[in-house]
Amino acid sequence: NESGVDTAAVLVALYSSTDSTRIAYHARCDTTGAYQMRNVAPGDYTLRAFVDVKPDSAPGFYPCPAQPDKGCPEPMVRAPAPVAVKPAQVTTVPPVVIPRKEE
Image 1 (tube, rainbow, N blue to C red):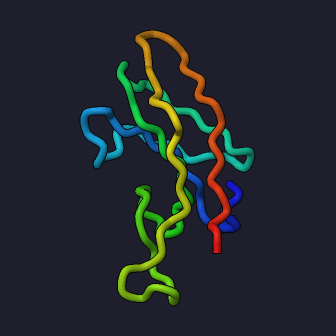
Image 2: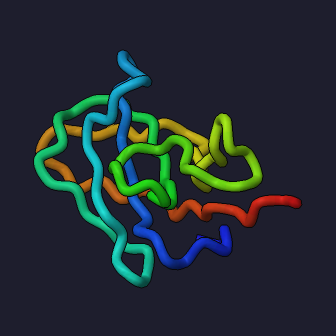
């Protein structure tokens, strides 16, 4: 997490390739950025990591003075490639970094 927002939880979420609107699985990162998800069904997923500023376990917007009508987007990054989960195997995903918001 290089976003500069260090007081909120960082979560990682998997979205099914057939439904990109709902989180299929998610996990909270520890202080080193490590996380683990268990019992993930085989399939292809999109991985997103985000700072959960508005603690609702989903990436979105949080209330902020800069944009009072819409809110500010929570810092987020999407992995560059799909995550392929195979049956009865451990899947390791390369690290992703939530970038600092450009001002």
